[in-house]
Length: 483
Image (cartoon, rainbow, N blue to C red; front, side, top):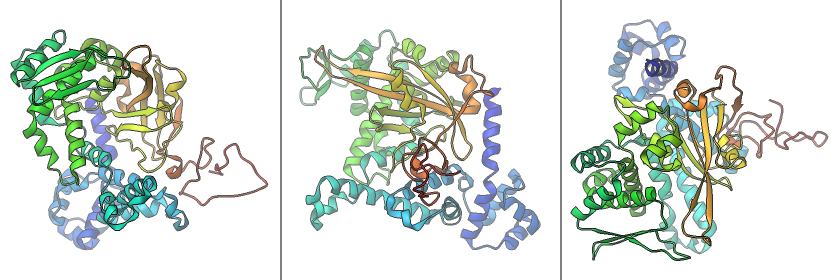
């Protein structure tokens, strides 16, 4: 019952901006407002109110608009426009554009009226950024022949974009997992033996090998001899994951191949990385099969630690899996995911909740995932609000990764997950917290694109307003200014 009301609220929020899309699509089609109103059988004044989001667009009229303008109904989705606007805001945070003084409203108009041109701008900057990063590290590539190798986007960005387009849900992969669990009668308690059987059927023998100080390899497959070696330094959950990963690489060529044909994967490196990422997705699904995991998540109210105990997986593995629960008709809470190291580097991200992450500039220091390092191993909670008014409930916690014995180094990361605030009451982490009275932390994508001019955490000037300098005044934050 709650999910239905949330979905309805989300739909109404999206509908409130549909008029803007109608206006943009009409202009793109070269049709006047009066002409479209005539085609729809409504008055021009009524259509004008719709286009300015002052009247709701009834469903039957929406179909007529799509037919009149000869566009797919998916063209009216505002999520893509919001994502594109956020990406362009991030692009404009590049100091390269400082003197142009481009305003947020200018970008909104560009996205609404010329979305293809806006996407072209974003694409050009991605490629420019990729080349700039490589050339800064390898100046020898400045010769024309060598520079041809760096004109493509970073493979990681291409793969991230593919994951976002699929909402981090791959139904064909999930179907294979469901079939394997049924055919081999897999269970959480005997998963190691079950995975060994599956690999044996594929002609592969599993060996758990001893480890020694300095070992860096935890999984090695010998395709000639058909031997998969797994390091004993891995905990059981990681051994299971590595075995399942190998099964995916060996048996899902057809499924992976259809995804790797995506035109947005422009290099062999991108396709190779995507194949490995898909194998990781498969492995996570093997450890936590969809319907059983969703049922447990609902029962345990998305308690990540209890879910880890039930499926014998780690905190990060559970957090990853929560973002994939997007099966039509059987969806979970929409989560975003973030993995950050102590230097603030974002190594993994997924905006499944609708939140937008910065690509080309540093993140916001007020996100609670950054503060997780202050209380290692403890859950931190936060109610936050983006500049556009969207509110989220987020939790974060540090995790430690250590392979080997006494001399092995330990890596500490912070994992953050969050969902739109209307879904928050479904999470155990809201217990004892009055969401109506909770402190709402104002956050943003990054300082360069944030319009909170008076933020005392501001590390860089905002592109939203010219830099104000007054040698007679010193504020708490050097780049903060009057709101």
